[in-house]
Length: 183
View (cartoon, one colour):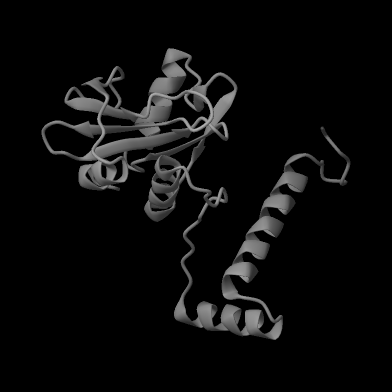
């Protein structure tokens, strides 16, 4: 999980608000700090970090890009089930950032930091979500050879495979055993 130092550096040490975190999912010592540039429209952004005042452990970070109406969030995987359970028990839309904008949950710390830094700097950024994949050495060699044979990068091959798997999942989810559309 990212650290308080990384958050402070990425936001230029600009802290505009702070207070006890209102939910109990992260424990009684959870605290939230916010950094906001004061603009809700074009050029606006805000970022929040929730952490333990005792251990300094970071539970959650988020960044809102008001210009492009996007919000990204990274929740410490150890605490995500507790967060989701509390959101459900509160009847809250645990995925809603504001109005009709939902959080895009990220799993890769570097992905979050790249987006946070770019949003704060007012720069363009990659809106795709990074996913960590784990291959054995044998699998990695096989896939790298396949990418070479197809004259594409390894990353492009993995992205293509993931997109195909997602499409297959969507198709399986919305069709019956005979291929009939259930939607």
